[in-house]
Length: 132
Image 1: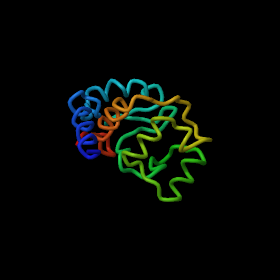
Image 2: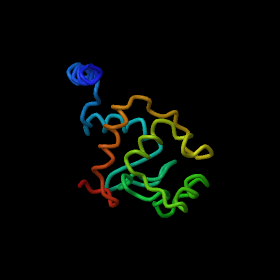
Image 3: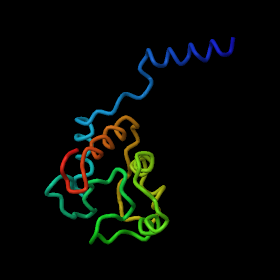
């Protein structure tokens, strides 16, 4: 009985669309506009207030040569941390959770679908700024 109720609840959630949608790269590009004041992406990306985000998905922390990262991010790099999708999702939600003394003055993106879209947009860029 309990199993049937659980399965019914899962089916209802799927049917009503309460499950997360597949990431939408176009919506992620729109979400990236919130990041553009401080970050660039693409073949001509340069350092702004923050480092370029080319190749960020799967990159080691503090991977961009020549950028003066905060101690929090440098410590993460020394510990071997990587910007995988889960870590990026956590960071984009509230940067101060992973890097309390970090430079990123951004309140975060609370909407889970918007974060997933943004990460999908970022994931399409190689380290040189070309698209995969």
